Image 1 (cartoon, rainbow, N blue to C red):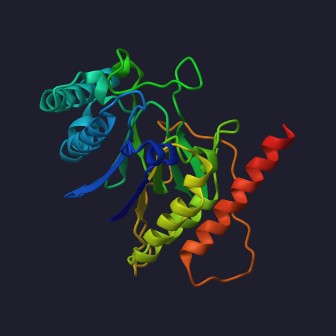
Image 2: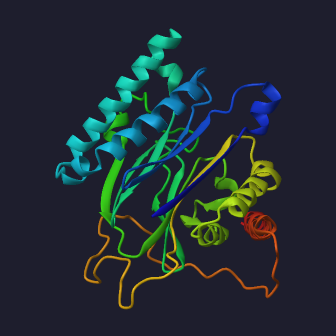
Length: 307
């Protein structure tokens, strides 16, 4: 069993300009398949919020209902072409409904689907996909900003199919995934070292329980008081966390055999440090998330100031 959480906030620039939030997330379970998706609508595309909403649901349904088919596909090119065909077909329907061109619906697209001890990851454009394993947070897929830092690949780009990253693997101890748009990157992602903020580990740890109310409130508070304050862009996060069982039979193992390796994930080979234990206990998870994230933001600002 996996817990699914997401949070989206309208960027300060969009609030000022009275334009819709162009970030969209979608979390859903399909029998024994769990899927989280995220899309960041292109700022230059006037109806990208419709496109982002369309592709998050489209790709979730496609991976959710057809996981085994994609897992069995041995040709990555064929898998990408199938996925892109579904994306393009769904966007075409939205374009006809709103009497617009496909380019008006442009967005990025990130997704993770899990069944049993297997995962499939899809990534198109910027944003970050991370995962947690053995107390460490690592990057599974880094942003694709194209030739220039301020550009990226969208679902409507001419080379979208070839630029799309799709890979699969065995969990082998992975117990959580996180998706983020480029909005939260200022706080939660170090592009130079390709590392995610350790503060996310606390969220993933807390989200493994059965009661998600306080965790959700903590994420919402962090979004409102910290993350959105460090960017003008829309912000979105999606989490998939393996639920901790209350009691496991003696000798049982939750993960794949030790000899299996996750050879399909591109990851940072250098371990990250565990979050520092301050010794203070707080009743509110939201305040704990805020404290950790604020510390990370201040640290990044000091590093930038001395570079």
